[in-house]
Length: 321
Image (cartoon, rainbow, N blue to C red; front, side):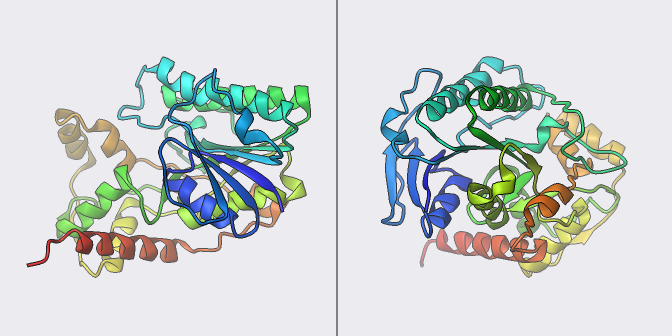
């Protein structure tokens, strides 16, 4: 049994991860606000983290740190709020890692993003060996944190493990994926039939499983892995699968991409239409071969579980007559 500190524990991924880890490990959940967890999870409320945060009270006896806390609210890929992103995603990460190494932590697992490789793929999926090409302050801050962690690992001997994740979906998801669920559930005719792209995603349960494996697997030390469900889909395929999972038939028609992009530009939604029309795929051969990791949930299962949660959540907020 390991003693594990999880930061960002009250977030979408953090809550699920803490609950899963608590079945086999001692977990300290660091969070911005009080959140309920199973009785085996120790809660530590830390409203704000930066380069001066004192982690001493959390690191005693800790073997593994899983650092999820991050500033991720990017509405524009070319956002220039580098000071905000660097303060949370870079400076606070370096501060925590140095204190963790001094406290004798053996492993530091960092949740990064596929966006360190770039915003889209063309002829093939990204691999871990591809040269990073981050665009925008968020991706730049995550790559800078990866590089700083690698240096700390070399200096101190603490093992550094990087997980680069694509879009994460599952019960509790918000932002873009939730908006897509609402679109599919509310609108019967959608103009996506002409889109020919390929996108990787990862179900929450699969991401949690990959992180949990890295806690103990000896082969994970000082490695970087891309993760996904292992099956890529186009936007039309994703929409049709979600519609089927929600028992809400959707008819797709073809609207020229140039028209869609022009309309999105006029509405200030260019980044949103890019996510719907461009490819962003990852190759997960490395984590499969080196760690023997297999996603416990298929894409079909993940989408069905997410759709079921979404429909239940909508039903719960309907006022009773």
